[in-house]
Image (cartoon, rainbow, N blue to C red; front, side, top):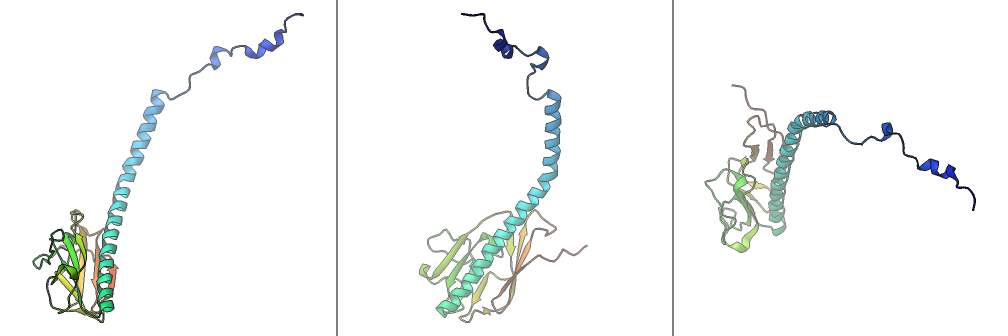
Length: 197
């Protein structure tokens, strides 16, 4: 047994109290951080709102465009007329067209129209697609409540523009126009700016 080795105890000494600080935020640092985050959120909120609105309008216009293309494609494939109409009764057992409506956002039907002049499906078996009302803050108006495609894929009647608008956006900044030509082709474009009064 020899003398105790005191050199090994040196590493176990406590550091001076000066270095024994608690880690974390002070109240002032926390308040400054909260203020900076608040300013950044205030700047980002309008851009985020615009991003969401534009994406919603793009989604609705793409869905509607796909329905038009499906109606045209089915008319060509089945070699008969296929119509697309506004319908507020898509949830009913026997959905029907709503000829008095002008807002396509209230819902629509795609149906086989063998006579080419029917204004509502002859039977529920003729219905190819029923889409219910969606997104009440948006409207999609057109001059006609029904569009019919011939077996050649052409529009029977007149070319139509469907104006998709956000009800809260009077500037039409977020709107889209879906233009349907007599040849049955669609174009999605930004609407013309409103005329200054």
